[in-house]
Length: 279
Ligand code: PDD
Image (cartoon, rainbow, N blue to C red; front, side, top):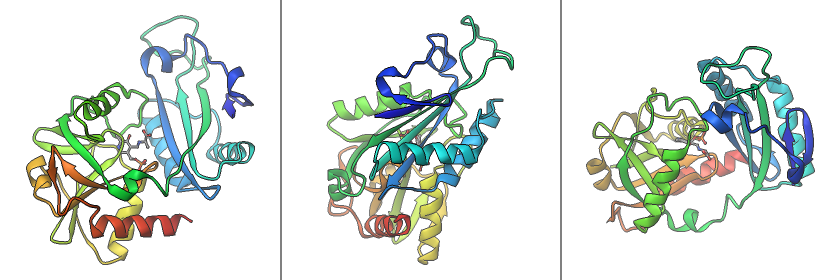
């Protein structure tokens, strides 16, 4: 596989990043995951815009322009002959000479890394059968709107789900669902789609924005507000969205089946619309 590191394309075995890199030492970096379907990028501009916002919030700047970034994405798709999967991009605050909590000065350039990952996005057991989730406390920091590489707790959340025999976890803060470990969360009741409003408590999903737009174009009713796990357990259906899962139905929450325990009509319809529009 060919990867990209700071201006160079090279075989993954030869790619190197300093042990002093602040991404490695402090989780001081941001990332994006952009899906590739039929060799085409989905929503690159949405991801590029969110990347710039994440960087701005942390006082960082991209070492390349967004046009150059698009070229790098395309080049990696070509070099790796990627038809379906994703591209991972990470920018960290670089590698100063020593470990120091204080941010380095402008003489320390950021580290830019990209790689591809082939993965079947259309056909998967999760897409077909839906997933089960458990609820866990959301103990992450207060700026979840910034897409940082600080993913230890979401990673622990997935492990808690796995140990409980479930597929994923929905996080709950102050009584309300924030989001999934790596996706946005939705419930459907009497045909109405409910998902948490945007704010610092959740990541502003690029897939979320697209799906909400498609939903309103299809005359589906959408309410952006917080909801509890109790409300979710009584919903007709539920689903999650992310670049890597598109729209995926949630068929059980904390062991309680929703509807007949199979992907519901709203989730299935939105998934179809999303895939159709992305091709
Ligand atoms: N995760 N919420 C969280 C906490 C996420 O990590 C993600 C994405 C989303 C959905 O955002 P988008 O629709 O822009 O992918 C919501 C990526 C896919 C990941 O970490 O792999």
